[in-house]
Length: 177
Image (cartoon, rainbow, N blue to C red; front, side, top):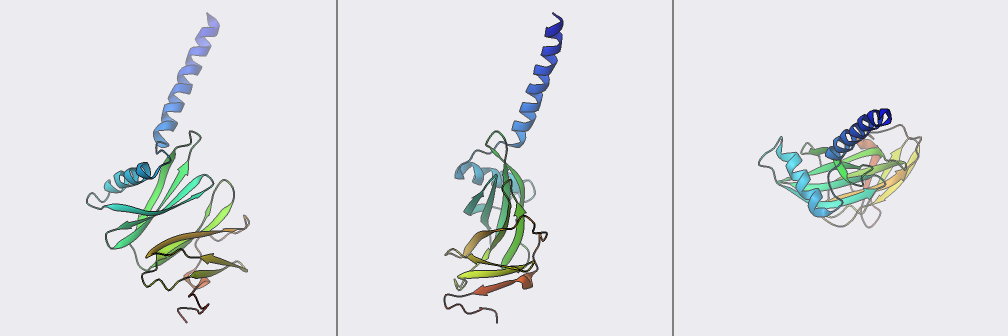
């Protein structure tokens, strides 16, 4: 009987922890769930804003989502939990410029993620110079893009400076020089 008095609280605590965890990581790994949950997340602050997912990059335990919102583009980061479902870490949209780049750490290492607008479709690749290393990132076709490359785990930079990037066309010509 005494053993039962110890086991019941442990089971109850385990159940509470499980449901608390599951309530944070609830998005299934499919396009419909991601789109719907990003829309719900966004409507908490922007009720009339409609989101249209354009591309998703699946890196290790994270998903990086490029989306269109009215006349701008947005970016979302989702993290996968132990239950193989995702939670939304953040959605970012609007602001100035047609390009953004950040370095994110996943459970397998660090990646430089770049995303933006390529309306005239001139950008074929981007060169990034970060901490004495140069990275070449091929840009997919389309008006909006999201692309990535692996960077060393020792990389300290999180927000590379805009001047660290150069944009090239199909003839290897720097577009903005």
